[in-house]
Image (cartoon, rainbow over all chains, first blue to last red; front, side, top):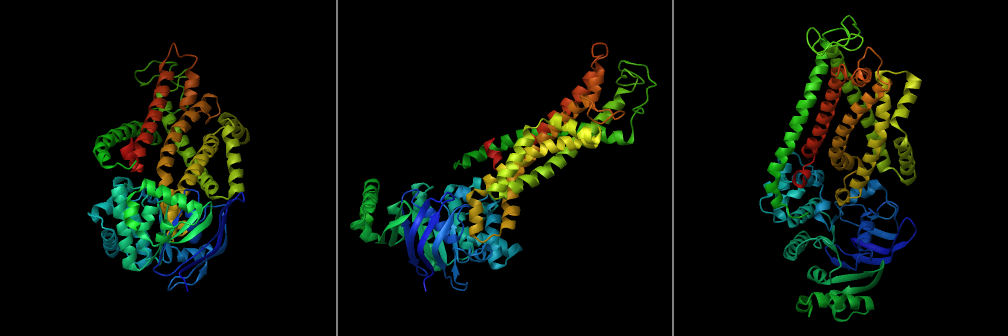
Length: 270
Length: 285
């Protein structure tokens, strides 16, 4: 049984406009999938629908079945808030694009990280503090003690995104959704964070759903992609095949523009 | 937005300037509070005592002189401080409680309930405070309680609207979603993330509202809608001294100065609180 089985997923806005329609894919435990498309193509909505966290007013249709080890197999669309809360964090969690807004600006980093860590592992006091420092060390943050005491605005963008990754990993999810996790970062920091994410996901055997508009970034971290356009899946397959022989015109334009902007793409994939 | 390390250098002097503001505000308000506290235990004369000569200039035995009925002005000023603070704190407590509760409800409500609350708030805000006060007085008679009720009700609409916007803004942010993606329940999200994030702005606004409430009380008393004599309010003192301001200016100047001192003090505290309550503000201002 697959970890995540999305069949005919649709998302409608409050006004009835179809934002995502008939998206289907499956993800095995420990597997990786890239979701690529321009802004407004429904990538992030797909991710939120998998979490059961669509903005108020939007409704999901179709089927999203999450079957994480040790947790009840759950149909996300139509599940109760209580069931979903049991799954969020342990079965699936998200790293967002903008780490500054993904962290509570008024709470020290250590305390924010302690929240899921403490809940997941039942830790308190000194043991919890040690776990927080260990979690910060795991995402290769130097000076974890200083960072734990800092407010989000007092650390750099790359450090913030590492903290956000540490928070997402705190609950040891079976599936990690990374929603453009490096888009807001400098290019050098972007490479480091990608490498970190890559390493952590492999080490923990997590499944990864990586969302990006950047084919070069996706090609570094996954082998398989699903191309979304205007809320529809237009093409799916191995990154190599899609780059070399795009079948859909939209995919072709995506590849062409990626080549134009990112000449290193040639070196990576050909 | 992202460059932060430079801001560390800026923070120290900025912050100390702000805490100076807070300190001055505390001293100014502290003086008025001290006078008000003393007035509970001791005042030089009975506020209704008209045995003194009329319109005496400052001196002995009446330190600030007397009004046109021969009452001791210092006594009236001290009691006025008590009334100004009581109305200020009372109406902020009432307005704050009602306003924050209403604003939270609207912030979390579904669309139609939110629309209903917002429409009610708009009507209440458009309603002149003085007219509201007159209605309250017409129903309940002029008293300290009526003044607090009228000012507090008018304030609650403003506080509620602010709270609603703040709650909406916080709820739309990624860290709320991020917190929920890790399985945090709604009540915990509210106590851990929503309230702490709206609190700094709310606190500063409530402090500013306290200054406005003191002024509103003075206006009500000036119009005779405040607490009735012998409860000397600064507003009613101003009104009584109006006719004799050229011959005996102390009666008008003293309550006016105290009013200004209290309101400036409260506003300075509000300004200083902004930084104490909100760590992210320390670098931006």
